[in-house]
Length: 201
Image (cartoon, rainbow, N blue to C red; front, side, top):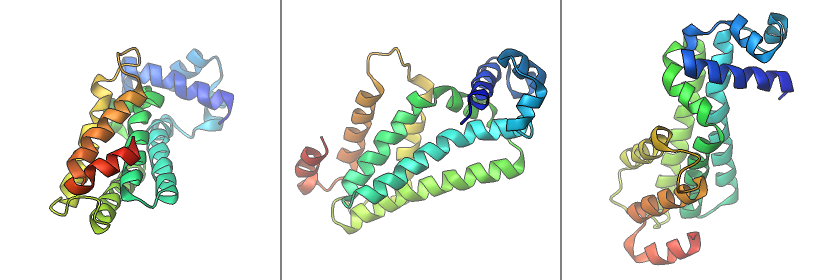
């Protein structure tokens, strides 16, 4: 990503957080960055595309990390652990992006919203597959609802954006470990829980 493109994104994140998507003009963004409208339109076709890129950045990150977890780990337990850890980490790496996402996502143009929703659905399906694989392998409880368990994980971790502070008592890695511990204790078969948790931590 070029320096100017990144500076435009960072500037717009700050301005969108402060004033809302419709409260910010391209003129304000370029003045804040110290570039021209030509510089802006060299990297983005519109302010709408810029909003899409902000949303797409962190969703693409978690998708990529989940794909890596799937490729590296054969154990569903270790796979789910890696997915959760990287999911939590995104709230530290892309906190401004996520704040703007929840604040301004209703303004995404339909074709951009469709692309984002497709990626969100893909991510949800990857978590669901990890739960299915864990049940099939006998590592996870057989009575688990794959759909509800997956939605519970997504809901629990997504809420991090409301309370996480980089200056807080726990680091993002420590918070990730707490989430992993809570979730794995809920999904692992009791007879394999002790062994599995020893492998994970």
